[in-house]
Length: 253
Ligand code: 5GP
Image 1 (cartoon, rainbow, N blue to C red):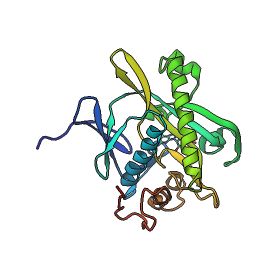
Image 2 (cartoon, rainbow, N blue to C red):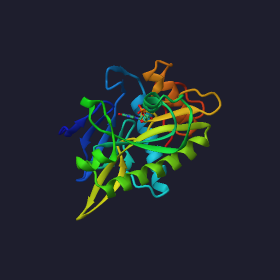
Image 3 (cartoon, protein in one colour):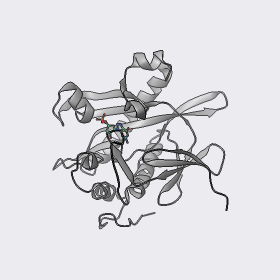
């Protein structure tokens, strides 16, 4: 059997050439990294959970008219997605102060923000994904004004959708990052949500207890990461209500 071609291996995912032109297979690894890969571990079951959760969020976004790269889940760890040109920016939306923003501006974690705040980081591991301004983005040609307007509009729609979804299961969406890809259709292009949306890329706090249910559990040594992601999946109905902390997750089709 011919081996499929690996296109790219990142910290949490591997991309393979897809079965049709314009498609990619996205494989979710169990590897967890933080602080620009200075901290790393393998969390059994994380890839399976993120594959399923990203499918759930991207499918939901599709139903409310937010375009994404997601086509279909192939198996426990892989999904078929559209091939796009990734714009080299991370778009972060924040509803409450936390993480690097709280630190940078001397805010209390959990402090309400006057409104959702959008930030941009350059996707560059060697530089630790530095925060950049619109001036940098336009001057260095990473994206045009129109691209950025479209990216912000997408990110705010993702925020509205995800905030509501999470609120419904007793979870606050504190912040998240998305990546956006350029899809060409002849001479025309449109921007769509790409990469993944999962507890790796969001901050999720239980509304009642404040318990963290996201990658901060790993970053800050707060307990078992797979247990936290299992809880998110269970509340959303992605795993059965009686799901036990991950040994081998059972998927509901
Ligand atoms: P912060 O800037 O506070 O570290 O992160 C803000 C939000 O964006 C958090 O939800 C965090 O998980 C997400 N985020 C920022 N950078 C990255 C990244 O490089 N990878 C992932 N998976 N998420 C990120």
